Length: 294
Image 1: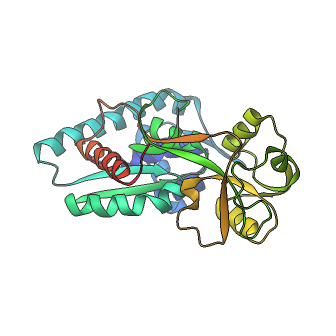
Image 2: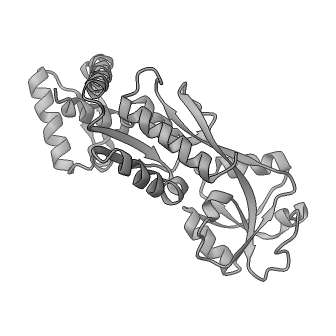
Image 3: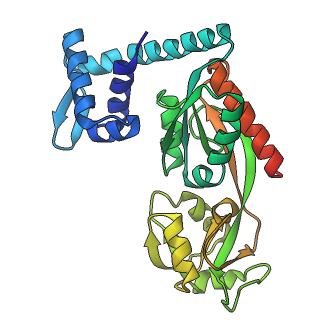
């Protein structure tokens, strides 16, 4: 049974627009638009109100939303049972993730997993904010996600790795190698910050240190911060995982206090996940356990 049209409906409802839903589903915008139009025609009611800022659910759309969500959830359970009956010969796992896991872990986890289960396919969704990762799982757009723990949403989770925060400075910086990095320097040195909305973990570190950084630049992503720091334009703080295989000449120093982010994997309901998703999570946990100490 194909539930693609209903999954498109859920994606548009979650994203608030056809363009972003198309990007996440790897569809064309016109394909998403035609799918929704066909579904509205089939059901005989308008599902979305179109406006300049995007789309919003109509009253009919809101009324049907929980039933469509249940239909998609039940379809996943059906697929799980079918996989079990055919011995996991094939399947699909939709994984939501963020940059450092996408770069440092996922290629190696997927490669070794596919050697064991070559007929299981993957759909990868990339997000920046933890809230987006959690929502992707909660809404059913992803079967599981890598995320910082604990989650805000009521998800079932497994911790994979405790990722320690470090101060990063350019190679040759006068404070390179200081252990720990002087707290007064965190307040006075030019600081390169992550844009608002993506900075909650950095903000939590400074709040606990009771330090106000001397922000000179605000950037959108970690690779840009690494490049700026390596050129001596300021200092920053970053988890160790982001620094693996770093191409820039940087020195990582311990913070005045030890801080970690807990990286884990989350699902909506561990008792309802597909067999292929369960096998992937088991494999990911083994891989991280073999390569890192918690």
